[in-house]
Picture 1 (cartoon, rainbow, N blue to C red):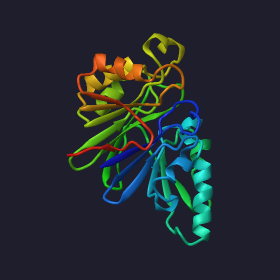
Picture 2: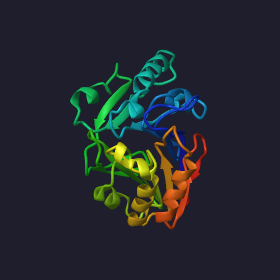
Picture 3: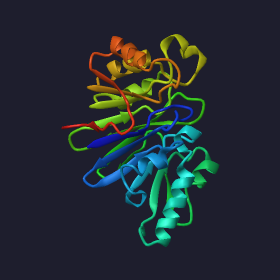
Length: 246
């Protein structure tokens, strides 16, 4: 399984970069997890857009879905050019009916309901979900392959549900939206320290921090997490591939 961060910033993209998105690849299947601002431009540095097989969306905040509309336009153009014939499935929760309905576009993309505590198969993975603690409905999502697994917290404050979902994962990709001394200012999110505590409680092997703040020294988030988590900690960097070996 190869996981490539495409966008790693929360709220808005840092200059020349993108907000939340990861590309998952296994057995020739390519799935984009979240599709935030600036993601579509960045993704094309890795694959042509018509080669994307699925998209999974955690929630509908702009830093996670801003480029969905642009992706749909790209799919429509590629279909006119004969580059793509298959409809792209976009898996997302149905709790915001208006936003969910926008995932259906000119038969080039189709919204597929992904609810909390649901279990389904997407490509080569068994996918499990749970609701997070966030101001809007949001899903943490786990991808299990034959020999390894990765869990994405998406946006969340501390959540026992997320700990349970991530239990025993090889890798936890956790948001770390700010520093521990500022966490009270942004409800519904985790600090680097809390991300480390969550990883330790879930017994994962590796912690990757994402949804990073544009202010301060983000290496401090890594240091915070390492104080609470005994496994490997790293910051997500755009285009820096994460290889998981079973």
